[in-house]
Image (cartoon, rainbow, N blue to C red; front, side):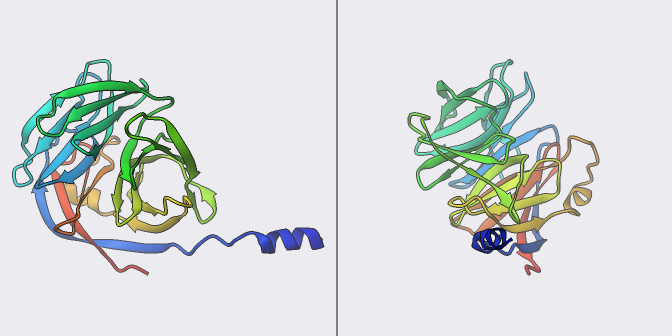
Length: 248
């Protein structure tokens, strides 16, 4: 009994989790045919990756119209997933093929492909490492130049592993992740894997006027210079600029 009690006391308690709502700042058009898989902001434009075999693409979008200014289609046997910027490249992953792609961010021309193990869901950059979600509770860290795996961290919510982490974005050193098939975004400490904040967007899908099973929240982009946070979903006709609210 004493040994058990000592062990319990020795285990660190899960960190407190902040919970936030949101308010809509502004809305923008979004292509309702886009099965949004990845999203990021860079130098005045949104970049979006979409999924489905035969319909996957990477595109540079005009914020005001939602129209593609440039795009690159993936081969028909690739199911596109997350994308992120690394230097002058866009790095993207695919769902189950173990194939990744590198495009020039200047003109979206394909530079090369690479291989990795496991599924690809979301990607983002954290302090020089490419971070990959793969549907499990783990985030995997890679050298973006060689795709050599560096480390893994298990994402935990109140001490329990949380899976289905989808699209990723890095904001102020934290990894933000859509939790697939939910209306929640979690903010993750990349050093420990602990979820430090939960963002509830449960009424945003109704505001977008979508109801299909696949029409889930997915897509986070951060304009670091303008301090703007954008979110959208699969097959949503609207892209939202939101601000966090009622955090407690």
